Length: 240
Ligand SMILES: Nc1ncnc2c1ncn2[C@@H]1O[C@H](COP(=O)(O)OP(=O)(O)OP(=O)(O)O)[C@@H](O)[C@H]1O
Ligand SMILES: O=c1ccn([C@@H]2O[C@H](COP(=O)(O)O)[C@@H](O)[C@H]2O)c(=O)[nH]1
Ligand SMILES: [Mg+2]
Image (cartoon, rainbow, N blue to C red; front, side):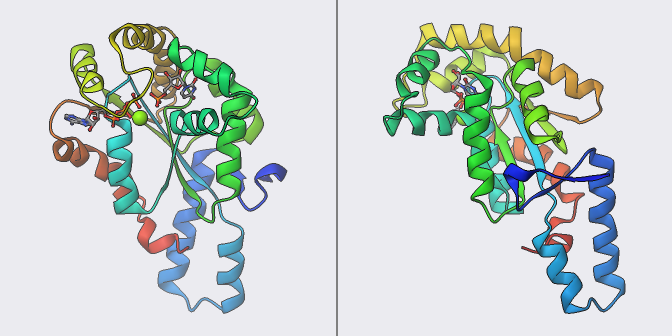
């Protein structure tokens, strides 16, 4: 039932989220009803089961903004795929030029490359709760992730936001991003509809999707997000 993924050696993956949740629930029960011998506690803390949330939504739908609040409240590690790719460009890596041109065109970087960057971050983290923001962007991304990690996300957030609101936010962002201009935004929106929405629908059908109304103030939107995570009782059962 349990499978260790060699390349993410400090994390133990479950094949499905039910097994994952049951393991977590069981540990909670154990923590509150028994004296836990030191050895057992250590075993649990070293064989961590990762909790993976994919954070999806169109450009400017507020993924990064809401992820910051989830990090503050629940101690997740935030991995923005777009940020990891921009960091690759800034480091002048061999793939930098190709990534830059892809981002300028609003297209999607090859799955293996993005997954390699995500995987590296997960491996070097002591945490086991990960928000993977802006990934998977396509069915190809999704299938490649599942194949390489041998795991599915535990849950998926989808920030649903009208296009005119997303365009307005992106054009006001002022972070100097090469893709925050009206021509690239139009391309990103097309790619989002054609390639990312099928991923959203896939997780909807699997019962893993939490659709969040992305319109409103940051705090109003976060009020919908918080209950998704508070049900897991991370603070109590998942001691770092
Ligand atoms: N609820 C909100 N109301 C108004 N502005 C917002 C809201 N949430 C975020 N913003 C602003 O909109 C811009 C885009 O937000 P954010 O970067 O979080 O979106 P994103 O989904 O991560 O976008 P991208 O996919 O382009 O990275 C930012 O300038 C942010 O401050
Ligand atoms: O998995 C991914 C994530 C991102 N990209 C490319 O980066 C830009 C910007 O991404 P944001 O999530 O908006 O920061 C995106 O338009 C893609 O070109 C990617 O290829 N794969
Ligand atoms: Mg973002």
